[in-house]
Image (cartoon, rainbow, N blue to C red; front, side, top):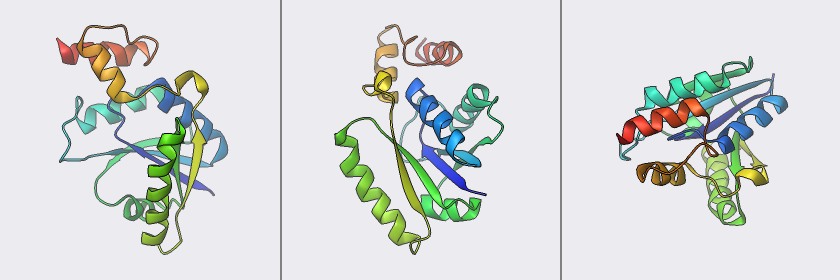
Amino acid sequence: MKTALYPGSFDPITYGHIDVIKRAANIFDKLTVAVLNNRSKSSLFSVDERVKMIEEIVGDLENVTVVSYEGLLVDYAREMGANVIIRGLRAVTDFEYELQMSQTNRKLSDDEVDTVFLNTDLRYAYLSSSTVREVASFGGDISKFVPKEVAIKVYDKYK
């Protein structure tokens, strides 16, 4: 069974993230969406809120689970039995950083964990969680960026 891990902060989850999740779920037998609990970073949503939000969105995908983690990604990948990390690429500017991280993770895992890059659908190539947060903070329309149930939760945070 091929198991993959799709890590991220998902603060909030966007249509770009959902696209990558669905495509990875079609490729791998099991996909774990791993929400990073980064205590040094200020988030709009708590890690538990992000996990619940993602579970609501991808709950119909039988081979997808959503969890939170902290610490080194490769350590968590080993713990979960995943030998593949999924990363989405929006633009060539993402690639340089992601390549460096994938090489670091491979070395840290003694060559046991590989990274698979999925190009984001062109409809979402511009999209990031920080863009969603910024637009919402000014009362802008984020309905083209996130599902309705996520948009409601984002706007509630800014009220």
